Every structure is written in structure tokens, then in C-alpha cells.
Length: 174
Image (cartoon, rainbow, N blue to C red):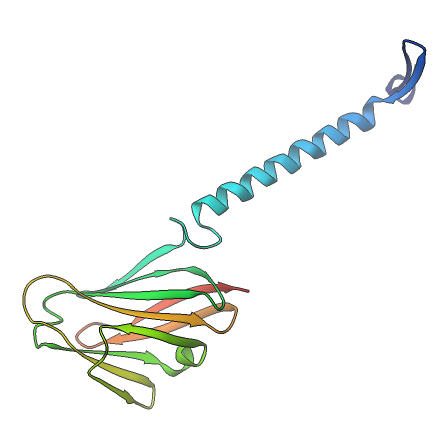
């Protein structure tokens, strides 16, 4: 008996004769198992934040006494935030200057800045925001809330006075 003959067997179930092709059935079962594994993997990645809003997406970039918390993966036209955390050393003068580059600002719409800047000035490289903060111990936080107006991989350069430049890499999905 050949392999094909063994796979195609006619079985009798009561009054019915049913042709079975076990070779095709086994291939179908393998495809179904692979499909289930891919679905479980996509679900696990989604829960972990690989598509935004989870532990894999949260990122902190630090430089000197400054750090920025942000989402590596976001969605176009959805609110995002840069949370700048400044050490007391950076804020000791009572004024903090933060600059965002022109390229980044051209791809985003700034919705809110907390606290409001005391002064905003356009420069050759971007926009300079000056904040008045309380001098003293502890961290200070400045928050830029924005919406990306373009999908794709985007790099943002943030300059904070008294700290080296920080570059943020983000992926915005449509």
C-alpha cells in the first residue's frame, strides 16, 4: 500500500462512507497551530506595549542632571508628552531654558506646556522656552504635551541649559 493510499482511506460511520485524507489533515493542523502561535505572540507583544502604551514603550533618556520620560511608540494625532525631570542643580538659578529643534516642531502640534514658559523665542535651530522655577532641593518637572502630525520614525533634539543635548527616537504609527 502506497503513502497516498494509506492517507486516503474510506471509513464507514453508520450508513455513511467518508473519504479521509490524513496527510492533508495533518498539514492543516500544523498550519492552525502556527497561526495560533502567531496570534498569541501578537497578543503578548500588544500587552507588553510593543504597539504603544505599555512597558516596552516607556523610555527615559538621561543626560547630566536632566532626564526625559516619553513613549517610544505612539500614534499620529494622539496626545503624547515629554516629561522633563530636572535636578536641583539644573534649576538652582531659578530659570531653566529648554530648546526644541525646528524639525521636530514642524512635525508636531504643541497642545500644552506645564508650567507655562515665562518667555518663548525663536532661534535659528528651534524654539527656546524659558521657565521660572523655584530654586531649592528636589526635582522639577516640565511637561510638553503634543500630537504628532506625521507617521514614521522621528528624531527630536532637546537642549536643556546645563545639560548635554538629548536625542529622542520615536515611532509614530498611523
